Every structure is written in C-alpha cells, then in structure tokens.
Length: 417
Image (cartoon, rainbow, N blue to C red; front, side, top):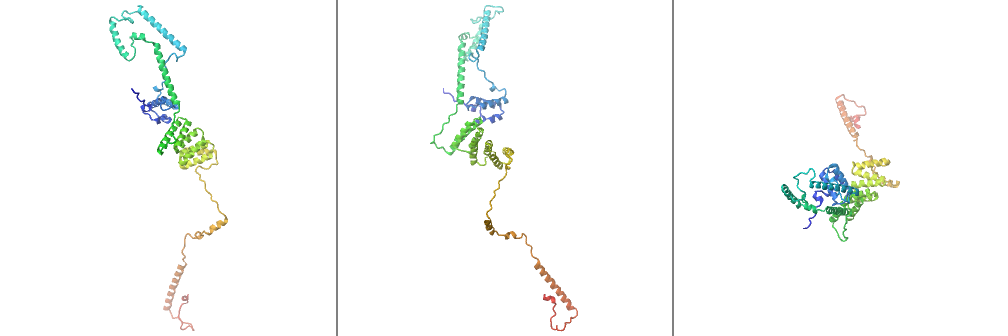
C-alpha cells in the first residue's frame, strides 16, 4: 500500500503563512490559534526560527498560562539517562519490594497466620467455586490479548515475558526518536539551496516581476526574523532580476540595521529616482544621513518631507532636534530666493531708451475744463441784460444827440464787445 502524502500543519490547523509574524502574534488574543502557531514553529516545516518560536511561547503563556502545549515532556528514565547513584537506589528499592512480595507469597502458601480458608491457590489448577470466576477472567483477558497486552492472570505469558528485552526495545525506540529529531534539526539549520536560472532563458516582464516579488518576500521573512544579512542577499537577488523602488527601499532599511549608512543612502536615492515623492524613502535617507553625521543634509531632506506632508510627526520632531543642535539652520519651510545680477551702465542706458515713460505720467483721473462753459454762460447773461436795457430806453424820454452826431445810429457801446 502506497504511503499517503503528509498534510502540512498550516493546512491542518488552517493557518496562513503571514500569521508566522511577530506583529500578528503580538496582536493575537486567541489561545487556540497561538497553540497551533507554536506547534507549526516547533515542527520546523516552514523553517527554523528560534526567536519567533520563543516569542510565540511567551505570548501563549501570557494569554493561556495553563496550555498543554507549554508542558515539557520528561524523557523515559533508563539506566543510561539516570545517574549511577540514582539508578542503584531505584534498583535497591525494586529488589527490596520483590523480596517482600516473595516472602508474602511464601507465607500465604505455607498457611501462615491470618490465612483465609477460601483463598484460591496461586498458579494452580482451580477447582470449586473459583473456577467459574477464573474462566470469566480468562475471557476478559482474551479480549485484552487481541490488543497486544498480557492479561493479569495469564501466567504462562508472564513466565515468557523478558523485561530486559522490553527495556532494550524502549531504548531503541528512544534512540530512533533522537536520530529523527537530529536529522530534522540539520534540515532546518541547513541553508536552502536556490537553483539559479540559466543565462539563456529569457523571461517575460510578468515572469521576472513574479520571481523578483518572491525573492523580495523571502527577504522580508528574513528581516522579520532579524536576520539582516540574509535579507540583504535576498533583496540583491530580487533587484538583479527586476529592480523596483519597493525593493530598494526595503534593502535601505536592512542596511540601516547593519549600520551600513552609505549603502542605505544610495538605495534611497535609487528609490527616489523612481518615486520622487516616496515619504518612506525620504525618512530613511534622513535617518541614514543623521547616523552618518551629515545633519545639514538630513535637515534638508526633512524639509522636503514637510513640504509633501506638513503634519508628519517624525519629520517635525527630528527637524526640531536638529535645529536645537545647529541654531543657524533656517526654518524647515523656508524658501531660497534667486538673485539676478544687474548689467553695466551702458546696457542699462540702452535698455531705458526703449521704455515709454508717458505711461508713467498719465493721470489716473481726467477732470473736464469748465472755462468754455463759463464763457458761454457769461455771454448769454450779458446779452439778456443788454436787451432789457434797450427795451427800457425806448419806453423812456427821447435822448438828444450831441452836435456832430446827427445821422448816426444809436447803439450801446457794450455791443461792440
């Protein structure tokens, strides 16, 4: 009969791979879910993560202190696992108990004091009322024999029982279990072998993106397990397949954890060349610059973050700390003004010849001249006054003319005007 394929513990307990994470375990409040996660981590099927396993056990102890998963199994006590003095003490107690049982059995057989007359004989053919009870006991023991156990009254099989052989079997089983555990630990400690694709194989853009994303996720797993060197290697492989802004950003953070600030700044620049408004890349670049003792450049980067997001708490607090350390720094939202140089006097004279200064002296409001209207009104009033004076003169006495003025027309002098 062919062996059935072994079911993974993730499928058995209905656990996602993303659940094997520090942040998820920290937020999890379900004791049964934490027990299943601890079982998966202990099995080593998904990798060897001792720190994550310890963290999961501590979280389970805080949520469910009486969990059976936290109980530690005690190995079977054998002659090889116990100290020689302790084993001699246990053997002496067993031999003493055996001697006491033998003396008690001899006293019963020889009819010692306190013996009851209806006691059945030991290991002999039963006769009388005890035969029926023995037959019922043999029937019960027959059922137990089917399970591979020796009945309590099956003396024939007990005579053939060899305790030394049974103990040897138990020791062999224990050795097999230790060897199995050792082999599993070796598999977990061994680094996974990554088969590189041959150079002649040409992948499509979608395939390259899928392969790069898988390597990047593997690097994220190493980063969560605080294995930053392995994470940098996986990020580098992902970038060699398909360089992306996200992968550059993640590798920059891994470089910061390894105190390799120049490489982190270079990766942040690569990310910003693809995504100029990436706030995470700007903040990580500023953090690497501060750690690399380049505080003025870091202050400028924090200013760019505040121009994109004025309420960013990290940028505000870091910028205030840098201004406290360097008082001559300008405010983070200050703008540098461009100053243009002025040319020579001859060039300035030539440029002023083309300017129309008439537009500068043009009045804003034009007031109409009222003198012509005043003259017209004065002329009209004068004419009306003369007419009235002439009318009154005709109605009055005749006016004599001076000699030498006969035949001349009487016309007022005012009309000559």
